[in-house]
Structures are given as C-alpha cells and as structure tokens.
Length: 147
Ligand code: FES
View 1 (spheres, protein in one colour):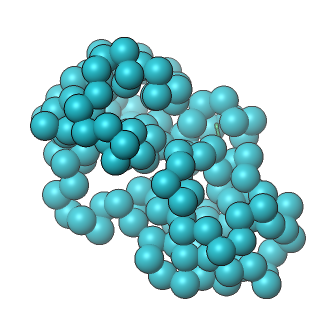
View 2 (cartoon, helix red, strand yellow):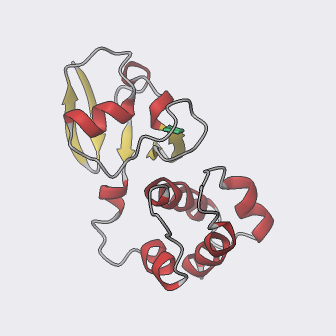
C-alpha cells in the first residue's frame, strides 16, 4: 500500500508501484481533471503539482513518490475564484480546453516561485503543448494572475 496526500486528503493506493500517477488519480481517485494526452511526457496535459514541482504525471510511477503531496486541478479549484482561473477566463484562453488543467497547474507552480514573470520566463517555464495555439493569450493570463 502506498500513501500520499492528494488535494490535502490522505490517500492510499493498493496498486502496482509502477502505475503512473496519472492513472492512479484518474482511475482510483476519480480525479479526471488531469488529462491523458500523449503518455510520453511530451504534452503536459497530465501536469500536476508534486511537492511544489510541476510534473508530468503520466511519467511518474507512484512507487517513486510515496508520501508526496500532490495537488491536481480539482485541489486548486477548491479555491473557487483562484486567480489563474479568473485570468484564464478573462483572457479567453481556453479553446478546445483539453490542455487547460495541465496549463493551469504548471502556471500555478511558476507563480508560486515568481509572482511577476516576464514573457520570456513564462515561455521558458510553460512547456505544455496546445494544439489550438493559445500561447499568446496564455502569457497574458499568467501575467494577469500574478498581478
Ligand atoms: Fe503526460 Fe502528455 S499525457 S505529458
């Protein structure tokens, strides 16, 4: 049995330690806001906060992070008017929306470290992919959320 804290709740997984965190979250915890895109660590749709780091959960075996504090988009949005959510809406960032939970989680980690990032710092930190190409609005939203 592997123990974690997920969205401030204690969680135990009776799963193979090689199970990717993405599938533990989605299938065992029903936290389906974390998305499956590529499964190879490229797209970032599955990004969650693990101990203050933005990590691709599809590439994180649960056996390697026992005891970790994990925050998913559901945990972030318990704060109903989170500045990132408001900023993403104000800048009309989402298009199809599939990548947005991972984008917001990566942005939340960035803003915890740097509340006023430059465009260059945002572009360097935000390696998540978006097939709709919302990148210009994404930069505006992250800067708005940090203000
Ligand atoms: Fe994990 Fe694409 S699904 S990076």
